[in-house]
Amino acid sequence: GTGAYADRGRKHILICGGAAEAVDANSLKVFFAELFHPSFKQTSPDAVVLVNTDDAVLAFRNFVNTEVEGEFQRRIEILRGSALQAEDLQRCRCGDAELAVVMANTTALAHSEEEEDQENILRALSIQQIHTSTPLRLSLLCPESHDLAISARIWPQRCLGLSRMKASLLWQSCRCLGWSSLIGNLLVTTDALERTHILSANQTSSTVETWRAGYVDGMAQEVYGFLPAMEYVGKPFMELVKAAYSIENAIIVGCQ
Image 1 (tube, one colour):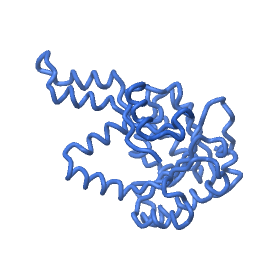
Image 2 (cartoon, one colour):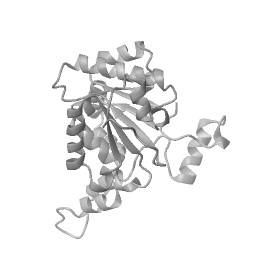
Image 3 (cartoon, helix red, strand yellow):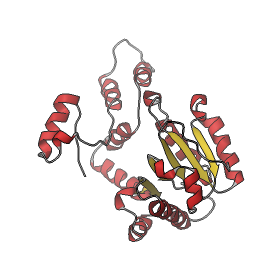
């Protein structure tokens, strides 16, 4: 845990925050399942985890050994250090990272949610100030913390308010039945083998129910961010939308 992440010729991301320190298993299992999903295991980046103590290093290593598939365990490097220290960020090669993720501890057992958010905001500020070009994502527990992070000069686009997201999802689900399932399926990768298993599970006849076939088809749809080709820069947005649908069968839902 006291060494450094060596260049392996592969992209990597940095993970730190309360979720890493306390080993928030529920959040981390979902995160790593998506990061190392079999659908894109050849292109998925390494994960460098930065935690403060030797105990946290041991706890996280135990989590990796029990919850992450064997072939991906060696893709996770666990280092002891602090995101507030430039030399520790250097050991993680934060400046070369594809992304730095500051994850909140959703169990919040060690202290209050406000304290958890404050510590993670400090981590995010340190990363943003020391490695300005590294993309950053910060998850926060309290709605008020989002405004606090923005006032501290963290970009709004880099802050994710978990409470606000849950409230918005619940509200939209009341207005539109099936909204939560739609969003969940778009955000979670499901490969062909998983979809086939769902189609055949508990089948009493050779005919697949209409609702099940429609649901599984929805699971195949995913959402991604992308940069358009240079040939579309400066052109009307609708021209890009039409080209994406006709060429790639993709639907563009927004831009920034």
